Length: 213
Image (cartoon, rainbow, N blue to C red; front, side, top):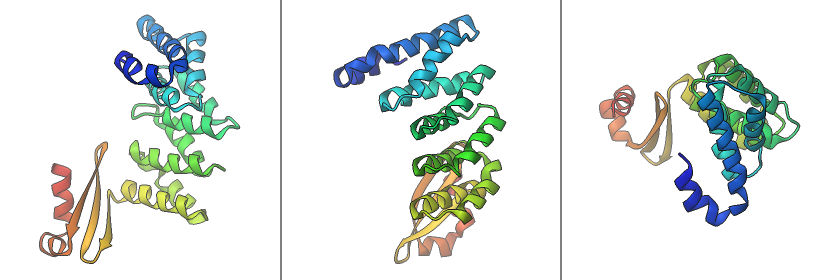
């Protein structure tokens, strides 16, 4: 499924990454074909998923996330990644969580991520909680927000918290003009709303319209 992207994007720009990525893809295919996981193939995938190079980890963390929905060994590998001393690897561990990764692992890693020493990891933890619609994170996010001092992190925490807890965010961006962000299932809708629309239709009706779209 990556052949076209590798040939058209990766190979012309980062040819040195092609064999590394292909090795991880082959390892994933071996696991899928055999319908069982082995340590050698898993370690190849984890090594590339732990890379600091975007074209590698952005692709392979997705594959590791798929494996986490089927194999306890993949979940253990993600948990181990999150205990790394390197912020980039902890960041990549968050990316390896998906909608069907066991809920307890997602909650464990994301709640710890909100208190990470790395700003990058903290912001991604909040973002990933919202992306996975992990509502169980709300009390952890509220607590983290109340103790956070970094304004950029606080802004991101507040955004994710509102979407998780309330399902929407309404912000005035100009005089009588608002931006309404609404979460619906696994997507986020955003539209401009005038004060006149708010007064005429009401906020709840506008939210319903966006959820039905």
